[in-house]
Length: 99
Image (cartoon, rainbow, N blue to C red; front, top):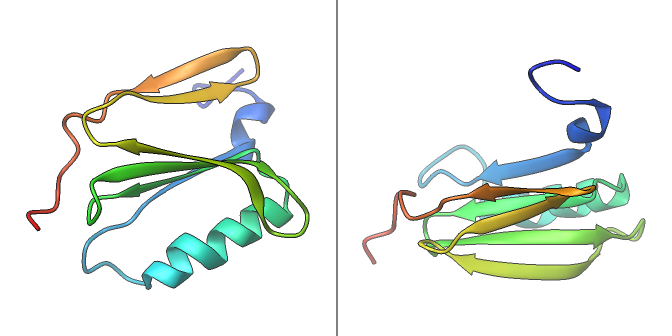
């Protein structure tokens, strides 16, 4: 096993939207989410500083939809289930939108 985990760990993906970053919210939040679901990636996490939330999409379908979605506000723990274990990400230090 490498420092990056085993082969199952490669099948997870997260994306952090940067304010003013390259791409659009539609590209980042919709097109990529659908693409990863079609490829059966089990988790897709969006960290959205504009809304101060993390959104976890799971249980992907080949149709491009995820059948489960959870929204976690910044400040709460982001718990990611990974085949027999969990990764907990503390979100209280994430940069927040001023609006």
